[in-house]
Image 1 (cartoon, rainbow, N blue to C red):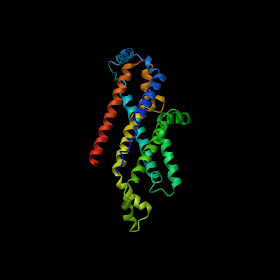
Image 2 (image 1 turned 90 degrees about the vertical axis):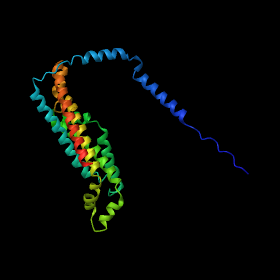
Image 3 (image 1 turned 45 degrees about the horizontal axis):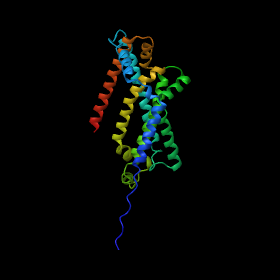
Image 4 (image 1 turned 60 degrees about the horizontal axis):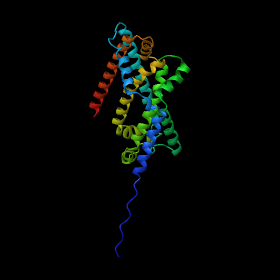
Length: 258
């Protein structure tokens, strides 16, 4: 007796498409995007950008000094994040954590620190410490701890168990296996994530200065508020040049370690 042809499996694609279209419609209605005039917005944007005609570099030494402070904020924040993340990522790795509860608590702490925006941390520390670069360093380091800690923990989980067992078979204890097997196995991941974090922190440090966390963002906000567009244009050029330099440096380091 021949068996009948099985029924065609049900496709949920139309339902998913309907749900996506419904969601997009709700977003358009909620944000009032139907009232957005693209032509008028483009004209307003072009008129505002036209105010940045010629940069004024009269205060260039001051701008360079504040840009150096911005890079220093990013460097210190990234360094603190790297040290703390390297120390705590072992507790957040499923295969290395001493207890499931420790693993879950550490993972949730990293996720929380990564989820909270740097700007929120900066406002909190400004209210605690006052205006200055210290608030920027603390804000950037906390967010970096969450990102690097979770990234390093996931990399350690991907290391082959035989890598650890080889050292344990000759009498190495847990920390020796991490130092000589775990971290060397994820060296490229550590370097890549750290360089990415530093690049991001340089950009974020410039933004945090707008709320008073030190760096080049302070004079940029003052120039824009006082309609000194030539000074603001010069500051933006300094920021752009620094960002390009840090990105070039990071790419060079990655190529050498590849």
